[in-house]
Length: 268
Length: 309
Image (tube, rainbow over all chains, first blue to last red; front, side, top):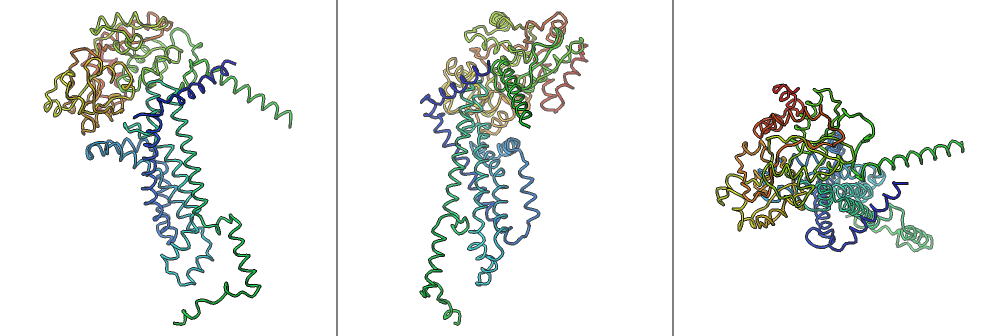
């Protein structure tokens, strides 16, 4: 089959391109471009998280503004990043000098892309907290903000993280648009490769972006594993063991675990 | 159940194989869209293509309109991309005709192309074309690449020509299309012909809104903008002269596959070329770019006014 003969050379071209050390080092090498790419992605993700996580938590906690924000975030998902990038550049170029006129539009486009998933992760996380846990926290005398920060937020972490994860994945995959307005990042290989018809370069760039996106997703999965309370994930034998241990000790008459510590204080 | 599953599997396999077969026919361009159906279609059916900037689209619309008026069956595939993308499309039959510019086209096929005057470039181009392609009569309209600066920059640095940039270019940021980084008429040419090294090269677009805006607001100090661009008079940009003719003559010329050219096609396109000059083209282009009129409407008006539509 003719197509079969044509397939492997493309892959060989990519392998040849990627295994040429000259393509990895220097000002426009893969390593430098990857760092730039991660730079844009990281900054955009932090900005988006700083905006969207508090907003999502407050909305989930109070239930106020839910309708407006949910719909706005939904609508924001439909904004085409590329269109927004051009619009912002044409708007900002006369107002900002130097490279900032290329950088800010790219970052804003990525932040707009990342806010909806983070926001919906945060408020959905808070909303899905077990009402019994919330009631218990209030019963213990916690104030509203304390309930939010010490009970609802930790319980919401799995969903907050999944919001962050999907935002990070989208940002890393989309940060290639920065190259359209003359910035660096891995998009350079895609744009330059396409424009000068250097397809091995273009395909290699696409491959590196894909690998990077998967790697970032994996790292977030790892971070999620260690940041979320074991009591929520049900992971790890330790949590179960401690509960068992307490029960066993209690049964054996060691009252330490169930001693009414706070009684004397609450009388004051 | 099992029989059906086998049938579906075989059917899928066949579909995949034939799809893969199609792919291998289209000259190995993984970006090729649509089916070329190069085998089908008679002598008087022509697919007109264009590059991805407004003037090329406008010229393609003019060619398409002129051919249609002569009874040729025309289909259009516009805004294909850069030269590196559409020449192979011509060669594999995805398109049959595209508006081109003599100088860059000659240099595309012959990197050693030396002529810079209109006639010399045209002769050299005809010699350099591959067997299957041909150019018709060139028009007087010329749209050259140019290095353009703002009036303020030109006044401050005393710039009239590209040569004046020597000794000053290392402090200037140059903007241009991404392919300028490697193209002989781009950054390598400026170094070779004028010995210019810029502070940096910003890959933007081919004389499009990014380049114009970036030049206007100072993100780049010099930009590649085409001589017929309406933004030049609109922003009082200064087109730097090109005394060493880095940018060769760029007369608008129809480039076609030889097999698709017959006397009807030739007559229609040569009549168009006879009516085009740089000023006409700039005016028509301004209607598209500045007045936001549809290229096909502008093309139709031009053809009608010249008795070609």
